[in-house]
Amino acid sequence: MEISSIIKSCYNALMILIVGLGNPGRKYRNTPHNLGFETVDRLRKKHQLPRFQRGEMALISAGKIAEQSVLLAKPLTFMNESGRAVAALAKRHQLAPGQIWLIHDEADLPLGQIKTSLNRSAGGHKGVSSVYQQLQTRELLRFRLGTATEDKSNLKDFVLRPYRRIERGRAKTMVEQATELIEATLIEISPK
Image (cartoon, rainbow, N blue to C red):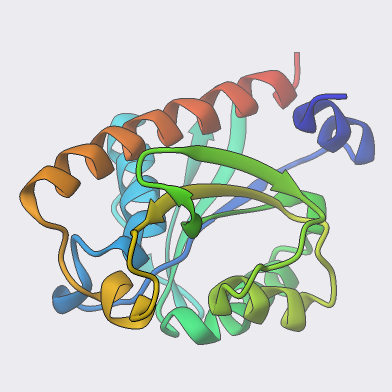
């Protein structure tokens, strides 16, 4: 069964919260850890949603994509505390876990590869772990954007350093593909 079918059968979604995980601040732009931020930025611009405004622990923008109501969010809590912002948004908007989608970097996938997952362990990703802990569930759709490097001995430094030119091009293409995948998933679950 496709992930969108599972989500569609779980509830009648009024709104989807799409959270791009990352770190706020100029020094973290163009780093692997901020692929989630980049993807929600692209979704917002492509669909001409309002500029991000400061909300409760996150920058948010609301509108419709593929006839589906969405709330785009970029937590301001830094990666390892992302769960605080996601939990606050979920509570405020009374969202079920199936209405919350995460976009984040994934060190276990090659740069450029994208995978979706549902009810899967955080795999060591501290931002995802924080969300799971705060929401007390793993029943979230995740869009995992590959960042793998051959040298995983210094992963912390790798995910926080700016991409090199050749990596940047591949990361930009991946963000575009992730945007298209999210749009396609929204089309599949949107009210007919």
